Image 1 (cartoon, rainbow, N blue to C red):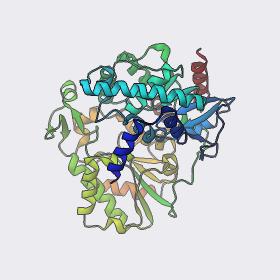
Image 2: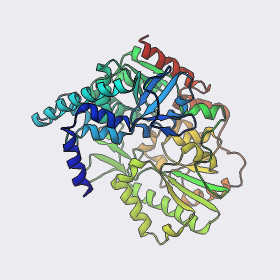
Image 3: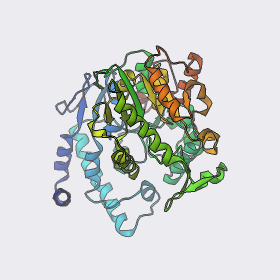
Image 4: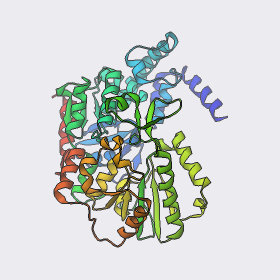
Length: 464
């Protein structure tokens, strides 16, 4: 019924006057206030530079930090609204490289041209209704962002990519980003703001953007860590003093699974090839994943005074890998739904969660680096001899292994978790090495990222 209704609603919008569509979208463009709340009631113009942040759910705190600036008025819109506008004419699952390289079928190419025309007409009205000085995204790969930013540039509203990728320390990840950029072609916006030197290098290696377009400015959300001014400290609510957090990674995480070209390039042997998939995997990935989660379940069942939190990204919950995880829970001998101290969290503020945690566990996520900087004990589980494999040669934290608590045995894993609740400070980190890791991932550790972003955005809007 919902699908039927949406299809007819989309069809109806092909005939709606474009100014009316612009007025409807205006109702979904919200202003972020300094207290973190949103409102749809604001003036059409502002003395401040107005930034429209597209796909606002992906910024992970950047919106709130930019709102602190005295120079900016922050407006934002969710990708669902952008998707609706795209889907009025464009049908099917179309990849961005098909559009940028003109590899669309005759029928789809016609839909593509209609979509560009629609955005031109709607955004022209919208930008007359609300004065917008620039638009931002967190990436260049999303189709709803593509049309909005392409047309914004045509309308002389500069597009600035606040590139969210920062962990390119694994050569495999780096290669994948280069291939993605080369597949798309080139960046169509005015400016890219990246977190660190390696992120700037990848744009050069792919010939995706020019030196004048790319600026290194650090990570906005990390300023508050440097100043010890954590925001949203109460976003994660628990009445327990002991908290263990696993930053969820799928069973087919890139740590364990490589595409064929990477297997050959890095001479990774003893891989198991997944049926109907073009990648080779570490042979023990399934049993590793299962034993890790079963152990966490078992610990939750016998330690009611400890909160065991599984923090996942929303996009992970729509995959077959997530079905593998949920089946694992159902097939276990433990009533996980009856455990009030076993929690799966999606939208909780990450820094708040880390702040409340005594011990953190993860693989290649940057949250493990943030946890180290926040003086948490960080476990990296590498059971079943993973460290002796070629996969480990490509592991992003190998250079900084001394900062982590690497655990190679499931029994030691449990022991390290329990011992963390009796430790006042982690025994795996030193300040000099922490700062080195921090700069590699987050670019700067001076707490001045906001000032750099302000200058870059202002100069871009002014055409400097």
